[in-house]
Image (tube, rainbow, N blue to C red):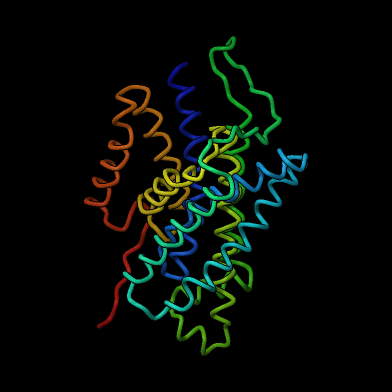
Length: 293
């Protein structure tokens, strides 16, 4: 039963990575930017929900909604103030700016909430399910996280393929100049992409803190890096790829912790990524893009 317990734990952790990776892949797939401040938006989402529940006494659902609203506004502000002026700049300038925004958010959180870790109360009220005479336990957090990841991936797939804004996003991703000539508002489309990514980061932050109930200004750094790895693993720019990469990454990490070494689990995760990219550079579900020169 330990294998099944570890598998459920891997699916739960992988689902969190998948939700974060979906935010990464949305921004990169449409705006062609690597938003390395995404992990810190996760942390802000966790703090917003924590403050709403702890200081204001609001129910968890309201706390999650407040976190989503704040992170959505934050995502739009980051895009308009930090990234939009650099849209025509070299990719290195955008990368350095993203790192700068990340440090800014971490230090702002440090000033506001201090470096002392906060104990986060889970937003999931679902009781654990005991199976096989108690030998197999499925926590409420695991159930909610897995369901949330599947629902979000399905909703994003439908949104990008069937709605007017989703089609505009795909058009901007394919050819920004042609999309603008066809009357698509590039700024609004990219801002919407960042807003969706930031809202997903808020959900992921709350779910991650519910499963691992310690909140600090560096909470989002490691899951953010691993989720970016998951997005590359599955094929960055691909919504199903982000989901697949996140799930596989979570399973590999949990099984490495359980059966190999807790100290080497992160190294094993990145080693698997390197092997996959050597065999398939575009990721598991990524597609090769041919450019005419």
